[in-house]
Image 1 (cartoon, rainbow, N blue to C red):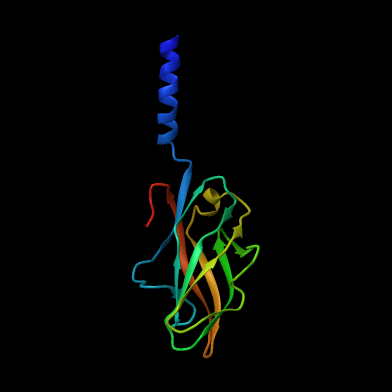
Image 2 (cartoon, rainbow, N blue to C red):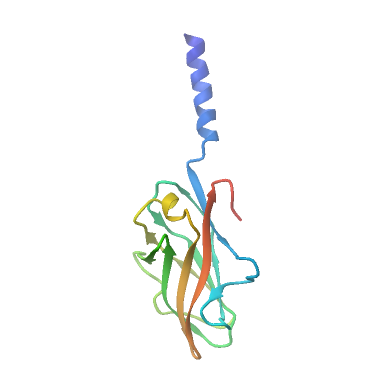
Length: 157
Protein backbone atom coordinates (compact mmCIF):
# COMPACT_ATOMS: atom_id res chain seq x y z
CA UNK A 1 0.00 0.00 0.00
CA UNK A 2 2.85 2.39 0.83
CA UNK A 3 4.41 1.71 -2.56
CA UNK A 4 1.13 2.64 -4.26
CA UNK A 5 0.95 5.90 -2.30
CA UNK A 6 4.51 6.78 -3.27
CA UNK A 7 3.79 5.97 -6.91
CA UNK A 8 0.71 8.23 -6.88
CA UNK A 9 2.67 11.07 -5.28
CA UNK A 10 5.31 10.81 -8.01
CA UNK A 11 3.03 10.13 -11.00
CA UNK A 12 0.38 12.85 -10.41
CA UNK A 13 2.83 15.80 -10.68
CA UNK A 14 4.34 14.29 -13.82
CA UNK A 15 0.92 13.87 -15.43
CA UNK A 16 -0.15 17.39 -14.39
CA UNK A 17 3.04 18.87 -15.85
CA UNK A 18 2.50 17.04 -19.13
CA UNK A 19 -1.07 18.34 -19.42
CA UNK A 20 -1.30 21.77 -20.98
CA UNK A 21 -4.58 23.46 -20.00
CA UNK A 22 -3.59 26.60 -21.86
CA UNK A 23 -3.33 28.07 -25.33
CA UNK A 24 -1.26 30.76 -26.90
CA UNK A 25 -2.92 33.49 -28.93
CA UNK A 26 -0.47 34.95 -31.40
CA UNK A 27 -0.31 37.21 -34.41
CA UNK A 28 0.09 35.73 -37.87
CA UNK A 29 0.75 37.33 -41.20
CA UNK A 30 -1.14 35.92 -44.20
CA UNK A 31 1.01 34.94 -47.18
CA UNK A 32 2.26 37.96 -49.07
CA UNK A 33 1.49 40.36 -46.21
CA UNK A 34 4.51 42.16 -44.86
CA UNK A 35 2.99 44.30 -42.13
CA UNK A 36 -0.72 44.81 -41.69
CA UNK A 37 -4.00 44.59 -43.55
CA UNK A 38 -5.88 47.85 -43.90
CA UNK A 39 -8.85 49.30 -45.68
CA UNK A 40 -6.62 52.08 -47.03
CA UNK A 41 -3.98 51.01 -49.55
CA UNK A 42 -1.16 53.18 -48.18
CA UNK A 43 -1.82 52.71 -44.48
CA UNK A 44 0.87 54.30 -42.34
CA UNK A 45 -0.08 52.15 -39.34
CA UNK A 46 1.83 48.99 -38.42
CA UNK A 47 0.45 46.70 -35.70
CA UNK A 48 2.21 44.12 -33.58
CA UNK A 49 0.15 42.09 -31.11
CA UNK A 50 2.05 40.44 -28.27
CA UNK A 51 1.54 36.70 -27.87
CA UNK A 52 -0.51 35.82 -24.80
CA UNK A 53 -0.74 32.52 -22.96
CA UNK A 54 -4.07 31.84 -21.30
CA UNK A 55 -6.04 29.07 -19.68
CA UNK A 56 -8.57 27.69 -22.14
CA UNK A 57 -11.56 28.52 -19.94
CA UNK A 58 -10.80 32.23 -19.49
CA UNK A 59 -13.38 34.59 -20.96
CA UNK A 60 -11.14 37.60 -21.57
CA UNK A 61 -8.30 38.51 -23.90
CA UNK A 62 -5.85 41.25 -22.89
CA UNK A 63 -2.94 41.62 -25.32
CA UNK A 64 -0.46 44.45 -25.61
CA UNK A 65 -0.72 46.10 -29.02
CA UNK A 66 2.22 48.05 -30.42
CA UNK A 67 1.09 50.71 -32.89
CA UNK A 68 3.81 52.19 -35.10
CA UNK A 69 3.27 55.24 -37.29
CA UNK A 70 5.36 54.74 -40.42
CA UNK A 71 3.83 57.79 -42.09
CA UNK A 72 4.83 61.44 -42.20
CA UNK A 73 1.98 62.95 -40.19
CA UNK A 74 0.51 62.25 -36.75
CA UNK A 75 -2.16 59.57 -36.42
CA UNK A 76 -4.99 59.62 -33.90
CA UNK A 77 -6.17 56.23 -32.65
CA UNK A 78 -9.95 56.36 -32.26
CA UNK A 79 -10.88 52.84 -31.19
CA UNK A 80 -9.61 49.26 -30.88
CA UNK A 81 -11.83 46.22 -31.37
CA UNK A 82 -11.55 42.46 -31.62
CA UNK A 83 -13.49 40.75 -34.42
CA UNK A 84 -13.84 37.04 -33.59
CA UNK A 85 -16.39 34.28 -34.12
CA UNK A 86 -18.81 36.59 -35.90
CA UNK A 87 -18.80 39.13 -33.06
CA UNK A 88 -17.08 42.43 -32.44
CA UNK A 89 -15.75 43.12 -28.95
CA UNK A 90 -14.89 46.61 -27.71
CA UNK A 91 -11.96 47.47 -25.48
CA UNK A 92 -13.25 47.37 -21.89
CA UNK A 93 -10.04 48.38 -20.12
CA UNK A 94 -10.72 50.10 -16.82
CA UNK A 95 -8.80 53.06 -18.23
CA UNK A 96 -8.99 52.80 -22.01
CA UNK A 97 -5.86 54.50 -23.27
CA UNK A 98 -6.54 54.03 -26.95
CA UNK A 99 -9.25 56.66 -27.29
CA UNK A 100 -7.77 59.72 -29.00
CA UNK A 101 -4.20 58.49 -28.57
CA UNK A 102 -1.83 60.42 -30.84
CA UNK A 103 1.04 58.53 -32.48
CA UNK A 104 3.72 60.79 -33.91
CA UNK A 105 5.53 59.95 -37.17
CA UNK A 106 8.21 57.31 -36.67
CA UNK A 107 7.11 56.49 -33.12
CA UNK A 108 5.53 53.47 -31.49
CA UNK A 109 2.94 53.45 -28.72
CA UNK A 110 2.05 50.46 -26.56
CA UNK A 111 -1.65 50.04 -25.89
CA UNK A 112 -3.00 47.68 -23.23
CA UNK A 113 -6.48 46.47 -24.16
CA UNK A 114 -9.02 44.18 -22.52
CA UNK A 115 -11.74 42.33 -24.38
CA UNK A 116 -14.45 40.60 -22.31
CA UNK A 117 -15.61 37.62 -24.35
CA UNK A 118 -19.01 35.87 -24.48
CA UNK A 119 -17.34 32.48 -24.35
CA UNK A 120 -13.99 30.92 -23.44
CA UNK A 121 -10.86 31.90 -25.39
CA UNK A 122 -10.74 28.30 -26.56
CA UNK A 123 -14.11 28.70 -28.32
CA UNK A 124 -13.73 32.33 -29.44
CA UNK A 125 -10.36 31.66 -31.10
CA UNK A 126 -11.31 28.42 -32.88
CA UNK A 127 -11.10 30.50 -36.07
CA UNK A 128 -8.62 33.32 -36.83
CA UNK A 129 -9.62 36.70 -35.41
CA UNK A 130 -8.67 40.33 -36.07
CA UNK A 131 -7.47 43.08 -33.78
CA UNK A 132 -8.81 46.21 -35.49
CA UNK A 133 -7.40 49.68 -34.86
CA UNK A 134 -9.54 52.57 -36.09
CA UNK A 135 -7.43 55.64 -36.84
CA UNK A 136 -7.45 59.04 -38.46
CA UNK A 137 -4.59 60.98 -40.05
CA UNK A 138 -4.47 64.33 -41.80
CA UNK A 139 -5.20 62.66 -45.14
CA UNK A 140 -7.47 59.74 -44.32
CA UNK A 141 -9.17 57.57 -41.79
CA UNK A 142 -9.08 53.82 -41.80
CA UNK A 143 -8.88 50.54 -39.96
CA UNK A 144 -5.63 48.64 -39.57
CA UNK A 145 -5.99 44.91 -38.88
CA UNK A 146 -3.72 42.32 -37.30
CA UNK A 147 -4.69 38.66 -37.54
CA UNK A 148 -4.46 36.53 -34.39
CA UNK A 149 -4.91 32.78 -33.95
CA UNK A 150 -4.77 30.27 -31.12
CA UNK A 151 -2.44 27.34 -30.85
CA UNK A 152 -1.14 24.96 -28.27
CA UNK A 153 0.52 26.45 -25.22
CA UNK A 154 3.89 25.29 -26.53
CA UNK A 155 4.04 28.00 -29.20
CA UNK A 156 5.04 31.62 -29.01
CA UNK A 157 7.39 34.22 -30.41
